[in-house]
Image (cartoon, rainbow, N blue to C red):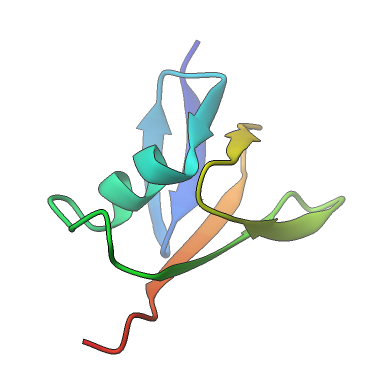
Length: 73
């Protein structure tokens, strides 16, 4: 089932029930190197939080995710 989420201010449709940190980074920054340091936050309207490398996020309709490259390069 497709879900519409907002990633860095852009609405996208995703056909998944959850995504890994790494998958979200690739959606936000296609082709980025795996050693880049990213800061990732999400807002579920009910609860917000952050995601770290190796973690997974369950997707809800309307989920807002912000990913920023904080590696300094």
